[in-house]
Amino acid sequence: QRFSMNIHPDTSLQREFLWETFRYAFSLLWSRAHSDVNGLPELIPLVDLINGETSDAVNVDIAKGKWPFLKGKMFRDDCKLPCSAIYATRDLAKGESLAISYGELKPSEFLIKYATIPSSMICGSTDMVDSVCIWCPPELVPTDTLRMRALERNGFPLQDFASGKTPLTELDAHSFGLYQASGQESPDISSMRQFFILGQLATDAEVQQNISTGRLRVAYLMPKDIGNLLCRTLDYNLRLLEGASISSKDDIETARQKISLAESGLLLGRVCQRETLLQWRHLVCRKYGLGNEHGQRNGCRVCGRSYPQSTCTRCKWKGDTIAAHYCSRKHQKKDWKKHKVECKAQDSPSI
Image (tube, rainbow, N blue to C red; front, top):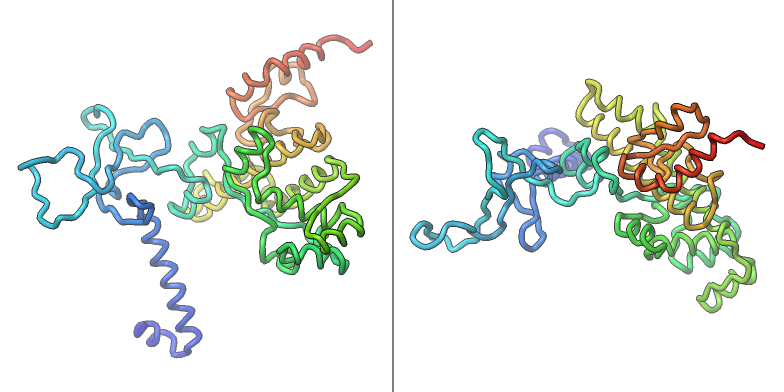
């Protein structure tokens, strides 16, 4: 604080300088911290000497709060304190580099902690799903008094939605897993659906009933109407991610160039956010039966991702204008039983 007073005589600037210094120092410590046995962050100097990995190259692990091998007279615990130790998870070859797992981190968490995202997290996994904030398109925030009253009584901060201060909801990997496996909606998705029903689809009488009783019953609600609004919202969020490039492939290529680590990390983060939104969009189209006209024509037929991407060799060889795209060999094999019928049918001339 004394240092900040010498730098900035103005009190308001002193506070700002202190806050920025604190944030910088905190980010340094957080980037090197690991969770202890209680899930709280702790600093383990020995771990900083070992490279991190997210793949099969991992060959060491950390035993937290205990001495796994040193017993009896071999070890004296004079301080009576728990200790963490690094141990090999398999036999190590002479000269082999030690590698420890980064842990179960989502891309955005990894970016915050390490200022980058490993390529294996993007290209090496078909299960890459990040946590995403869903922002409401301003035109979908109602302005009539009745609907505003109903939504605000249900806890929706409409002014913050309209100004972009607060996201409509936040979707994580757990919500995605439930939705993908059985169509089950987490509370975050349910609240978004409620917002659209009250704000766009319910009649005035149904909105008034919600205000009076707290219940939401809509007599004539077409599922596709909800699906269309969800897709519209996801498309809006995809447009928010557009910068100099509008594709994940372009962002990946730019990130591989000689740019700063910060710029590269942000581009990779944008790729993870975009691909997660595309996967959510694919699930919404599938659940509400919206059909191909609402889908991403160039996305993976199984999950909707646009990157990485490969094309059915047979479609490509035939020069089909609408070829089948996939994010991985795994998904191509999964879809082959269905696609081979379509692919072979195109061989036959139309009658």
